[in-house]
Length: 339
Image 1 (cartoon, rainbow, N blue to C red):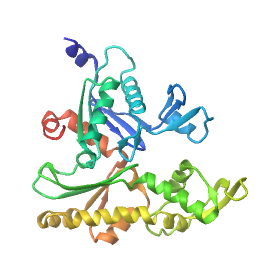
Image 2: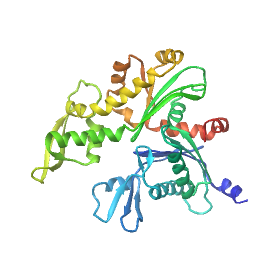
Image 3: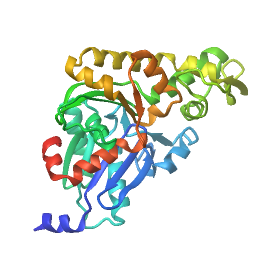
Image 4: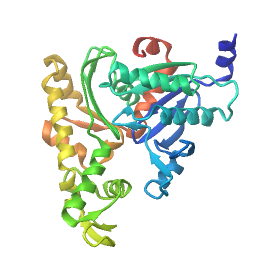
């Protein structure tokens, strides 16, 4: 009886609980939540003070008694309690109330996650108030979200570069033929920029500044327009604030190692692809999705390294949650793909 009431009063939710950003899709309404995966808590009591955009604004600017952190690290739950708080916030945000809300949730997980890590995702959502939790692998959701014909007997390759993981998969007949998940993605690019500036200029900057540099000036391949940017931080020698100027070539040099890891993983996936499906990929190319794929010139770099066509998804940031939403809305797909 209670389950019937919950089903009538609760809205089903498709959730992309990412390392960097969290998105929620509700059937009939589309994407209703798009927030950074950030939570600010009080250290002693663990009381949640801010979630999402508000918490991100506090990153690196809080007193010692407050802590801003991410519930997810490299696609894996870093804190069960904080993840529960984040999911509970999402449920309330979608329903605008606390009472009689027990939604069914379809959530995506990295294909490289272990059964223990997947169980942790389910348990967190159930503890936060979900009635039922089903999981879909991220590369499958991304492929469906960008409209790849994964149920046909032909090869489709998708590369989803998120905040914590890069998902690479070859799909055919509705299933994954080969996949790999590496924990090198957008966050590692930010960290590489932070480390480069510390090594070269003895200047300490925060991860938020590293992300801003990546978004404003980052590129994977030389661009026609030279760019420079002033960067503010703390001098490691004198200990006082200092401003330096960096250019796009330096940022590209900083990004070399994480980009090399992604390129090598893609080449390795192509080497393990069956010949017939490899022939299909030559014609169709590689589909890029995820926020990390927005790095300027990344498609050009991959085209040069693989000699294959590279296509950018129309909405890279939303591909995974849109695919998860399509699975949620299609009972046949849900039964076939969700676990």
